[in-house]
Length: 271
Length: 297
Image 1 (cartoon, helix red, strand yellow):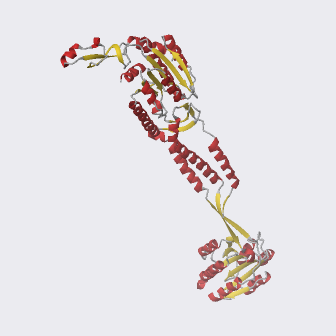
Image 2 (cartoon, helix red, strand yellow):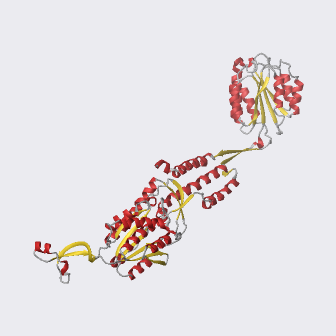
């Protein structure tokens, strides 16, 4: 898929959609009503809800979600395993996610950073306009993912140095890592990009499965039984991962390459 | 002793092991993430398939090298005889149940000659060879038991022809001592072969012809039978009772033994079908394991 095509589709979704105007959950100045709570010293007296105060007999104040610019950091955990896909590559699905989040963030005039983490290196893109988003999409589409290894320490180190942001961590999350520190500092979102075929590899044929990271080969004649076994084991791993995310209040969701990225992403971020 | 008929074929085992280790099947290959997890699930299965492959190849090679169990049967014939038994089966032998008695004594005689080669010929109207010289006593005894009076006619006695025919059995013999035991109760009355010619042939083949006359002395010609025996360096016996016939065969049984060719036999028992059957079973398991997805689809 061409980078231009991905961007255009994302722009169409983002700029014609009004429902997802505010992604921030941070309390503060804004028009997005959140809740009514008793007045506390220091609260803005302009926000006192007199109607609610009259009913309860004590001062009540309106609380809104923050409406000011926020920092958005999109972190892409690039690994060789992203070079897989039945209908389209996982890397292409990630390109679409970048386009959607990027465009949405640009629309809200947020400070947006995109960082690719591959091996021990980082590639930083400041997304100020759609042109920047296009370059970032082109970068991931042309990335030689084979023999690329994701280094979690790099990601963790980078995010811990950043000021409080809304962080999106995007990858296929095949390895066990501790995201608690990141979640403690940032409002973290994990988007797990997978392909249906890699979760249920019922190829029904004898194949040499090559590990794209180190080139190791596994000979497998995967049938229904073995595929089910694999699926169960992977499901257990994923459950463990989701428990970890839930424990540390990380908003997480799985997005398949065959999914409509915009709808799925909206569902994940609203949950 | 257990061995292989073609042991050099076993060298192919090295090739089989090398093949299983290094000759990889060319299959469609795809990049697949998380092969570590998948590999842990398929490792045992792959090991089983490789083992089966190696076992099948090895068993086929073992089958090809033809495993055998060799049993050496050495017939110690260094002190044995080549004996041709010539039996009168003419109608007159039925008288006083002579034929049955003689047969029983001959069976006993044959079974005692464990290391001798025995041949059997019968004669009446004509003479024919029932069994040529052989170590297979069982066959000789069986054939002898099946012979009845009349198998070669009933009316005449082709004695000289029988002697002549029996002498021919020794044509290819390398034995130094050759013996024929001619048993009759009558005189030659066919004139198919002249007496002297028959004796000459026996002498040419260096055969000692022991002549045994049974029954009434008036029925057989003592002179001729003695002449045959004496001319060939043997003896003439006459008997008119079962006991005396038995004694005659006992005497012959005690004859001086001479050297004849040593025969060594190797009895081979083939076992190639066992590894082949096992290979077939393994092959079936191999295909079943390999194509299991077809059944599970």
